[in-house]
Image (tube, rainbow, N blue to C red; front, side):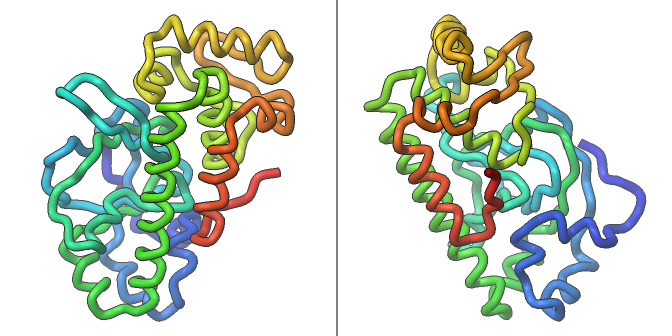
Length: 243
């Protein structure tokens, strides 16, 4: 991950949470925002790490992984341009609770966590935005946990692909078998079988990690109802709709 040399100009508007702030409040924190580039596979934090920075993605996508015994993982959320990484600073947390891994390379606005806490204390608008977002994140994590326990892998994979589609605003993206296995908490062979089943139904094309969703409506029908629940949970914050 590298900081970009040019100062942040209008790029902050690419993040919907920042764009939702009143102009005067955004102008106050603008000097504290740095534009950074993140690469696929970058680990931005691990469970128990102190929260030093908060990230507001522009076009990158960050996967939030719950970790058990240091090696078993399960994706409990995704953060794209509709959200932020480090939202729990609004709740008074000083350490991270998840592993954050960059799923798609891109840029983000980054601010020192202490500065965000200070702005949060003085800005009712920022408080409202962050409270709504942390509530949506919690709802998302709870639903994904339920989904992982009770629903078949094929439906879970469909749900995960649709959420990624919504976050990236694109029918085409790259996700390796290894990443999906970590995200879904299963072995790679399970991902291969589930992806093959969706491909045989003409819902997706999946080759060497390159995914194209061919029929979003039929894929949504193949997914469990958790997809719609997760989507609706974020709709009231700033989540983009993608038809």
